[in-house]
Image (cartoon, rainbow over all chains, first blue to last red):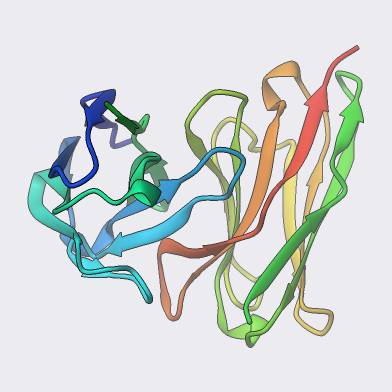
Length: 108
Length: 120
């Protein structure tokens, strides 16, 4: 099973700043099978990015994904107040879906 | 609009059983792979089970294999999860989710979840 490790655990930033979130896999991941989700307290996760870099429907272009192999990144170019949340990366492989432990983006 | 509404959660004793349901609307249910996922209190997300569009192919996480059964009724636009031999570590919010269209690699829409608590 592929293990995803997200860093940092918590990111403290101010609105308007740039956020860079990392997701590292224990072995190579097919880029087509890497996704990112946003989750706010008490809410279900929302798909942001699939295929490592494709934005889901309705997702603002300040969100971007990149990476390949074992290293993937979610970037939020300028944080809006509604972007403070937990972000999860997820991969598919060998008929199994696994998630990272999440990165919390909090207001500094 | 797309809706997934879970029901059937509640408090159950260890060793007990529970059946979760997920009612889908706003899209052609039979065109999508469907999933159950869960999130224990204060923890990360965990995939639980997968079903193909017809229900002929299913898969389970090792943590629930042999205890949980996923099924779907495309005529009723509904997804189910039969849970048995429940353990304290099964306590979580359970979400149903659909795949991307013809792409089972990610979850493009989630329900709001239903809480399952396993405790004596």
